[in-house]
Image (cartoon, rainbow, N blue to C red; front, side, top):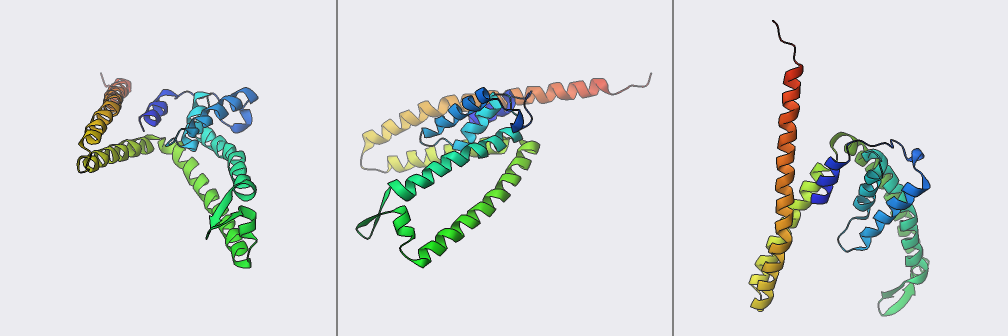
Length: 212
């Protein structure tokens, strides 16, 4: 969440306003950013959008390019699930395509699921890009910060009620160490945002013509 807030403020002068202006080099670098999503808990779309903004794209262009990057990624995951991964169904291991073609009901469910997912994705992409143009990542950043703090508190409370007090103490210490930088950066963000608002208000007041 803090990273989203930081990058939302850091890249305010984009030079690329359309994915058609992307070069191979910038596309490759944005793809490397997407690899950060291999870390558990990191959003693929957020990592690629931030990477696109770092390469000079606008919010909407970065979001659009992120969805394009999802196509080969999702295609590879689908092919792996269909032809390589074995699924345990009632003690019998089957590959994905074998499970789907096992009955007409499975084939119908698979087809309907893909159609619904496609339609919902189109609507979600349109809404998401329009939202980013107007409001940016602020609400997503604060959402992740608040939920992260609540989950951290919940984990600490649960750990204190466990039968392993040493583990609870370790959780408290680790949670505190991890939370302090986040609180500090969030405070610095609020201070910077307040200072920016005051400066903007001062400039507006200076531009108002005064009668002599």
